[in-house]
Length: 159
Image 1 (cartoon, helix red, strand yellow):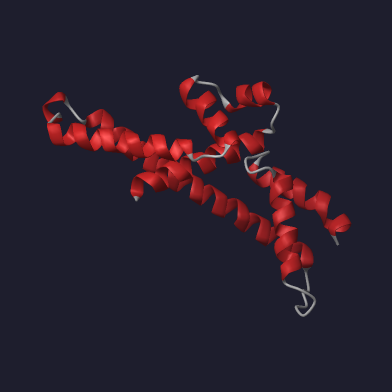
Image 2: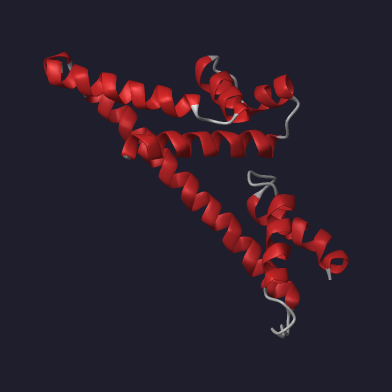
């Protein structure tokens, strides 16, 4: 079944969602893995359709998660930009210092790849394509590492 549907599934994903992220090959692999988890007990009349729906759902879940992280980052950035000089107070300064410390500790706990991608993108202003060239990692990997890093930082700030 893998040989029969792999190429078609990747082409359908590429046509519907582009070349990523997430990369069509990664999504197709995840769809086949989920299909395999169903086991032999489940009879599927149209495995191609099930694979396509599963892959579509994987991409949509990824985009939803990505949207939530981006929205939170935008809201935090807007909050910081909208804080005028009149809002500066000892309490505000203390809260900001505490947030900064939380972020610093969270960054220290990130895996090496996530630290590299975060540093190159946020501190040096590299695009994902420039990070790919610099590190030799795939675009999808760079994207996933950045998403994971931002999710970790977001979670640390929410706690």
